[in-house]
Image: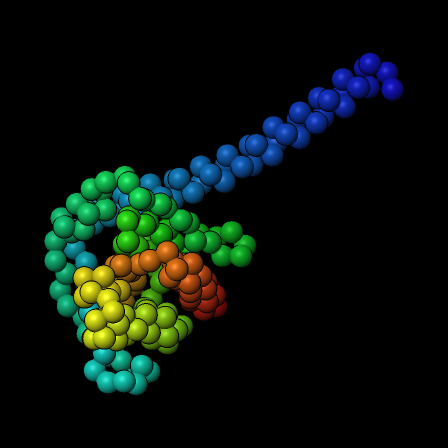
Length: 202
């Protein structure tokens, strides 16, 4: 092989390396812009409507979720920006790469911020039938049993809050998320939102 051909081969390799790096950086930039957009929405948002989950009977399929007027975001904003320690931001995407939500983890609190452009309706299955009833409620009830048996302290038990504006999902806050439950919650939330999005597109 001539020196000229060898140089051309090296240049093509370098070109390919640069192209791959650009693709990687563009993907990272897209995730950062999405994170910034959602955080900006949190800052400018004035009020939310809260959904308080309280089981009234042992039949999880019959759980009713009453709505209540939201409180000020001051306490929430203070907690989310209080410290950068033990924080993590995880983007949730569909199998085709479309954005579904951002998960912001601060210490043992998980904040799920859905993509505002998708307009997720909490009445859309499988939000209540799967995510609320079969995942969140079961985790909550398991911890309540541990508290009753004095294996777990009340302040360490899992609790959650669903925030809506009308029927549109604005945020899910899950407190006392341990490392073992993080993977299950992330997977369950991503699967739920993707199924909801599939129904929205139809």
